[in-house]
Image 1: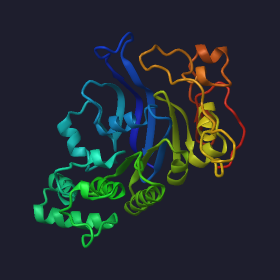
Image 2 (image 1 turned 90 degrees about the vertical axis):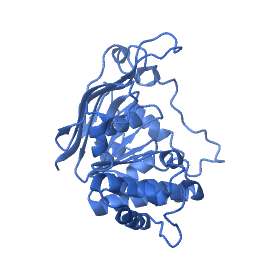
Image 3 (image 1 turned 180 degrees about the horizontal axis):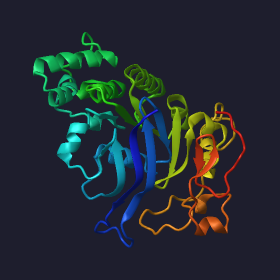
Length: 332
C-alpha cells in the first residue's frame, strides 16, 4: 500500500500569551509520526487535549498563525509544511476534506446549504453556478438529504444537528478528495444519529476509495471504523498498530486506562463506579523529562521519570512507548 499522508517528527508550539503566568512556549505536539496509506482507514484516539485535532489541523494547514510548526507533512509526495495559505487553499477540499466536530460552527449561518456545498466545486473545478448547484443537490441526496425534503435553499439553522453534519460531509466529499479527515464527527449527536453518521462516512469512503483519518476519544468508534490506530497522550503517540492487534494486546498503561474507563453495559445502577485515570495531564509549557504518563502510571519506576521511552516493537506492526508494557489480553 502506497503512503498518501506522511507526517514525520511534527512539533507544534504556541508562544506564551500575555497573562499566561510563568512558563515558556506551550508545546502541544511532540515529534509526532503518522502515516496513512491510500484507501486505508486510520484512527487517532485519546483524551481531550492530547493533540488529536492539532495533528489534523496541522495537516490541513489550519493552525493559528501564532503556531510554530516544525517537521514534515507530505501529501502524495508533496511537502506541505511551509506552504502559504493560497497554496494550501488549492489543496484543502480538493485533495483533503475535513469533517469538523461542531457542524453549526463549521457552516456559514447566512449562506444556504446548497451554496456552501457548491462553493468548492466552483473554486476548484471552475464550474458555472448552475452546474455546481446541480452537483451540490446530488451530493446532498448522496448523504441522505434529498431535495424534495431538504431544499438546497435551506439555511443551517433550519436543520437538525445530524442533518447539518450531513451537509458538512457533503462539503468535504464534494471535490473527491484522496483523504477524508473526520474530527470527532459525532460530537453532540444522539446515539442513533451517531451511528448513522459513522455508517455514512464508512460507506462513502469505501465507495470512493478514499483514505480516512478518524479522530475520536471513543475507542468503540475507532474499533468500528479503522484498520490501524494511534493512541495519543499529551501530544505524543504512545501506542500504534493494527486496530485488532492493539485491542487484543493493549501494551501501554494509558491505552489500558482508556479501555477501563469505557462504560460497560449494565453499569448504570449496577453499584460499580466508572474507572478513571488518576492525576492530571502535564502542563504543555513545562519542560518534559521522562515519560509524560509517568506521574499517572501505576507501573512507573524511577527510570520512567528520567528517560524518554522510544517506540519499540511489541507485536506485528505494533509499537509502544513504554519501558514496562503490559501483555495481558483483552477482548476487542
